[in-house]
Length: 404
Image (cartoon, rainbow, N blue to C red; front, side, top):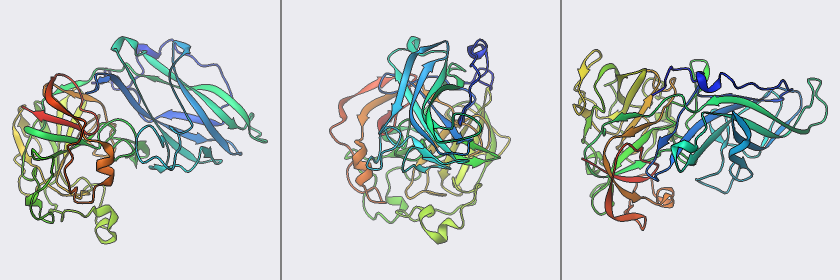
């Protein structure tokens, strides 16, 4: 959880930057973040920056080094070339430079008075390796003075960020049973959530940065059997959704009818016209779980809501049933933790699940190659011979998980 909600505590009190003309400005989308332990047994840090060319001439981002704020010669991570822009890369460590609100950039040029987003993440073998705060060393070309002129080489330090602003919230699983797959999870670009920036409430936000679309397969790795056009054919449709912590219900929606599988409403002109900020996540529930943190569950079945705003829930309580509503092409549970009750206007924050078995990974190319019904078997060579017990970790993207 965030220690004080600001990310500007002791980690930044003695961090100062020398004055320099900065044609490309950098502003963190988050006010602070912190490492979390993933299912690869590494400690991950993930956040976003907003870059703006505040000059009269084009600017180019050639490289950005993430450095220790208290020892700027210590480079924590470096991004250049393919990680910034690569039109031939569908997923992975690529296309981190984004058009707004979020689409792949075609090159690293930022025209005058335009903005981009930059998605950064890096990992450490141990928590002790992570610095308390970082600064960003930008390299590229741009105006050297406010007067403009031809673009020249630039490099300077910018955007201090507290990356020790708290600790991950430990929660219980939001579901029960075996063969759950963490679709669209953290951290690299290429799939939804990590790249799902929004302009909400007058600012750039990413409430879904650490969200997971939990989808269940059968023992053969199939998401459905029988008629793929019926929601009831899908293994996870109607599964119980559980409270991940004690909390208070602060918001619900229970008006949206089930989608037909295989059709993502945002890609259909008629259905897309019906999507709003309020219903894009379908029938949903928001729980205040304390400490300034909120758990959000999306896409559940209409009429299965077992709570209402103001109700108190206990960890493990059944609060609804998993469905296919809102902007979804198949049944799943979208789950995230965020800094406020707004579905898209809050900031997404990392968390860990207290206990589960890890059973390997689904190869990303299988998901890329799948049809809109997610047909086929998704258990490939990266599945483990025997599940491994894990505690206090966040399942990374495409992890296969068994919940108690």
